[in-house]
Length: 443
Image (cartoon, rainbow, N blue to C red; front, side):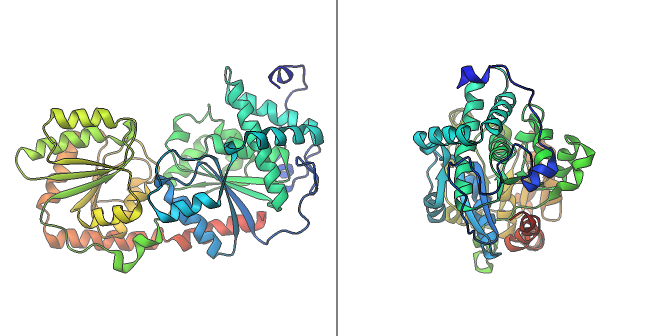
């Protein structure tokens, strides 16, 4: 297939947006035609939509599960697809149940090969054009990656036509949005995608973010900051299709009986984050080291990642074995209990979108310490915690110290306002209703 891809071809023809949205481009499959080699289903469930993401389910992606569940309460039938399965444990029963409902595109090599063959047999021109696009967006020297994108899209197009699904929604504007863009070239399917950041904003041109926006039915940003970044990298003619659709915490965090009580006397703090460079954990560890010289302080870190060994060495070097505990990945029940035992939640990130974990902490009436980056200031200010500059150990030390010294009344007032703020702007059903308005005309 790679040799054939290098043969002489007419230039890639970009499909006009109206044709993409209505499935009417000259070389697109007609409704009921096929990449599948068989007719599309004659009946289809009302308001059917498919979801695709890179890795699903995943502990850190619980907001996707929450969104899907809320859409199902809105009357949608939702099919779940993932490019690949998570290699992390799934401690939560809900995530394990989602794994059973989710189809993995890379799980079946035979299915991928069969879908590619069916597409080329039934829609050769559309397939060649889609393959050329896949190779182009994958970049020079990444022909294998481009071929994988195409194969995934072919299999997904086949599945969607079989079940009669006409719209595909994607979380993350990285490779799953590329696959969705290809699906729209291979089947009468429109696509949309939610952008979280920071990955999309770190490499907008390499990811061809302008092209993905141009061909999408709509694009959802999780914050106003994110919408501005998407507008920055798209044609002004496409700005109207970029909407803010906020994410929401799991409903279990919003239940009144889940709320944390009074802050504990012991100055215990909690951080839930992947142990990677963008989360700024070494600065937090250093800040705890400074405070530990003059007062008792405890930090629990829930999460894991590629920087764990380096962080463990830092903890040993600073003699903080009794003050900092790395607890690894944990499910939502464990996170809720840890928040109840914490005086405040802290997240010292260098790069973010708008972290759902901040919403979870605030929903449980816990003040938060967070860096003033990306969409975070749209949720956090000095009335619900401490908003600090990114990259400053001194600022983290000051915020931790202030939280240690804050009166119970101050912490209680911060927590109460934080919860009200989350309930007002990040309720799952309210957020899903906004998304549903965008999806209904496409399903």
